[in-house]
Length: 173
Ligand code: FES
Figure 1: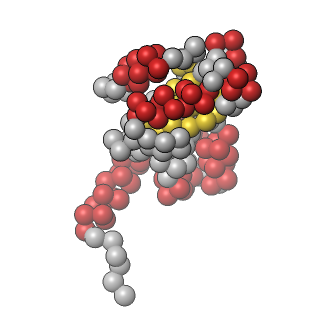
Figure 2: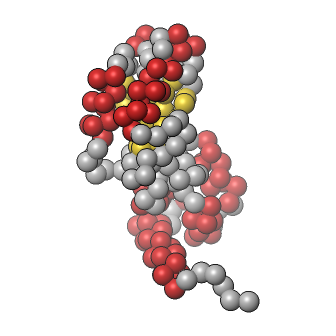
Figure 3: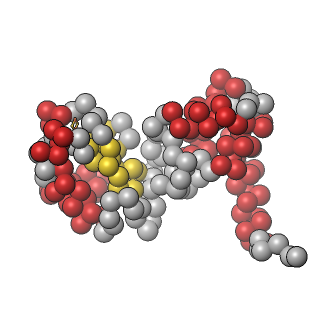
């Protein structure tokens, strides 16, 4: 039976494979560079995640067990194993933020982004998610994007935060 992969899809897969190999080679296939390699692959994916097939390529090229690569991908919060927007907006839902109206903040982001919690914008720029306490309870309600924490959120501040990330070209790390 014929494969269902079209020529264009095959070329795309080859292109991604070459990109992943180039990243691994850039770090000299060094095992101790595993985090940097995975971060670069995630950044280059266009969907802010490390796909299983690329995790396998990394394991093979670095001569590591795949379980080691999986451990790193699941241990560090900065890694995604499913497609995400370039920026993941995490809204704290722990009790202190909850009582300061975190639910209203979720609605504000949903309105500005035009998506629901758990979804990604069609341009792959933002994913909206819940998180637990990020240690900034005194400025709740709180949202975290990468390493940045935004507190005392109001509708105006939410719109301002979203606008500040539009047109930023660097990858979230
Ligand atoms: S409960 Fe939200 S930051 Fe601590």
